[in-house]
Structure formats: structure tokens, C-alpha cells
View 1 (cartoon, one colour):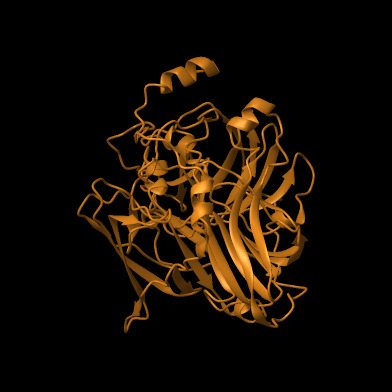
View 2 (tube, helix red, strand yellow):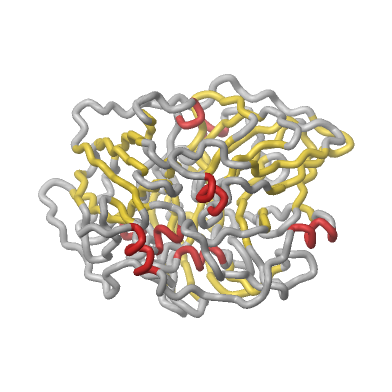
Length: 497
């Protein structure tokens, strides 16, 4: 069944959106009060039992936070009023969680970028009821990387993330530890979640009037506050950048155009550093950059207009925030900074996944709120994948809207963009890739041994409104002789909560 764009969007117009009355605060309100020190998400407490398992506890609950200076905003958070603690574990460790939901509605917790059994993935099939507890456990089987966790309830992901449910999940390993990169958490190794928000006059989150790519804010919130600065005490700092926004893209660079070294992307460290003065991140993407700092510096990390727009006209680019600029974080060099080691010339060698003899070649077309002209159906398995196999996926953005593409349980390699090799910054492991309107991306991925005939993995656009409106599909990973036995869910198509 096919639809016209006008008819398709008209059918969605009746979808209920939570509305908060009031007008948005401009950035001048923040500037007038002066910048505040950047909060560093605390490292989550954990205990290691006699069995060697590292145990964490997370509680999701409502709260209030001073996102804007002098105003209290009703929020949701994990082990706190807004955002969550940084989870940290090592490759080879088994981790276990007790996740309690004290929110007024069901939700989930998804481990974005993690290779994890499907029943532990935290997608829309692992709903935690209000007052309920979920207890996933798995062994970490991937290299050091900057991952994150966030909710994934079907039809409600944007709202739950917008209200504050997100946090970092850092994986360590011996190979990364051996490199002389900044690694003192909160001192020269800084997690940075960048989000855009809009507020009512009384400081509440304004969830009204989304664009075709979701809620776009006029205020940047960095690690949970607007108007942040960080005081650097070393000559190099490592920023672990996460685009935690619902639909906004960021083209990040420093106001003085200084060069930084990109050392890692979604799935871990690159083979070698990539010198840049701009890096673009779409929602869900991460990058690790090492930035030089001098004593007495005062330089602003900024979000600048998006440069590559593909098949998008000027009016759409404005609607989607592509012309916007924002201050993200002021970096201040202390009066005296300790000299840090130079960035190594080589980091972590990348072993290319061979595409010859791939078990399957699949094609995905992204348009409106559909993939391959289908909306998500919780009771439809779109295809099955053989465990421990390689597949090549070709993804085309057939729209004049921005989209990206995220796959659960894998880190993939980008082999081609419009028939050419990807730039060096996209040469590492990725789980989310921005798809420019009109362009074609070829991805190669190897699936793990995590088989499950009942619980599926997701693939979807990570612009959260698009995901909520059904731009998502699901697949099962099966072992030899296994037959699909998917669970039946009460909701069979995309919600819009």
C-alpha cells in the first residue's frame, strides 16, 4: 500500500502531543545570569559479587532540576532528577542490573550500541511497568567505547528522552588503557551530552508544536544545564560528545576554528586520529575528540549551521534547524595547565569485515515515517538473520527530510557513500549513521551468536519523532534449525504519545 505525502501526514495530524502552555525563553535569559560550571555525571555505584558479576541499580523517577538558572523544571531522571549516572565496566565483565520504574507510566531502558542478547536489549518488547523492576544481565563482548542508555517505549521514546532519561555507558579495555589518551574522568576525560530544549515562561519543558523532525529547542542544555563552562587544567582534554537530542543535528566546532583530533566514534577508537575543526553528529551518534587548551583560554564550543544538505530546499532546512547556531560549552584554561601527552599516531587497528560471501544483501529505503514503505508493527518480523553471519545493508534516504539509521546489537562499517569510500572520520565502528537526503550508504555488519526466536532487535531512524511514528522495523537472529516464534504484543503499530 502506498500513500501520498500530504495524505500520509494528514493522517498523523490527529496524533496527540503533550502541550505545555506558555512562551519559550530566549537564550538572553541565560546569558544575563552568567555561565555555570559544567556538571559531570557521577559514576554509578556498583558492587562485584563473589561470582565476579558487576551489579548496578537504576531507579527511574520524576524530579525537578535547575536546568535554567533560578527556575525549577519538572523532569524525569535515573538515580537523580535529570539524566542518569555514567555506567562503567570492562570488556569481558558480566554486568547485572536492577532497574526500577517509579515513573507514572511504563518505559524501557535500552543499551544503545551494546552487543547484548535480544531479551536484554531494552527495546519496546522489554517494557517495565510502573512500580515494576527489570533485571537484565549479559557479558560485555566488545572493545572500549562510549555508549549510552535511554528509553525505547514504542510510540513514546521522544517524550521520555526529552524529559531527561539518558546516560553514558563507558566500556574500558586493556588496549585502550595502554594508549596515552586523557583518561581521568571528570578532569581531562569529559562526557558531554548535548540536547536542545524549549521552556515555558515558568520554566517547564515545552513539548508543544513539533516540526516534521520532532521537538526543536531554542536552548542548549549540556550535561543537564543551560549556559555551561568547563575549566581545563591540562593542555589537552578529551570530550566524549553525544548528540542526545530528539531531532536536531549538530555541526560542532570551536569559535576560534582550532583544530582537534577525532579519536573515536560510536563503537570505539579509530585506527588513527583524524584532525578536523568541524564534526557533525545526528541524534544518537557519538564522537571522542581531543582538544588542545592553553592557560587562560576562553573558547566556545559551538553548533554551527549544517553544511551538507543534500536534496533539501532552503525552507525545509530552516524548519529543521539547519541554519541555527548555538553556544554549547565554554572551555576555560586554568591560569596554569599541566602538559599532557601528545595524541598517539596510531590507536586501535580496525579489522575490515569481508563482504565476499555475505549471507544476505538487504536494501532499505527511508521516506516520511516509513522504511521500505512500511510502518513499524510490533507483531511483524521483517526478516530473520543467521547468527554469526555477515550481511551487507544498503540504505537510501529517498526523502528531502533528514534521517539517520541505527541498528541494534551490531557495530557496522561504512564501506561506501554514494559509491565512494567514506571519509576517515567514518572509517571506524558505527551503530548510527546520518543519511543525507538523496544519498546511499552501504554498511557491512557481522551479527553475534546471540540467538532468540522470540525477542527481536530493532533497526530505525534515530530522529525520535520518526521512530515514534513508525519509522522502525525488527528482525530475529536465529541459530541453525531455529524457527521464528515471535511474542505477540498488544499494540501492533506506531503510537504517537
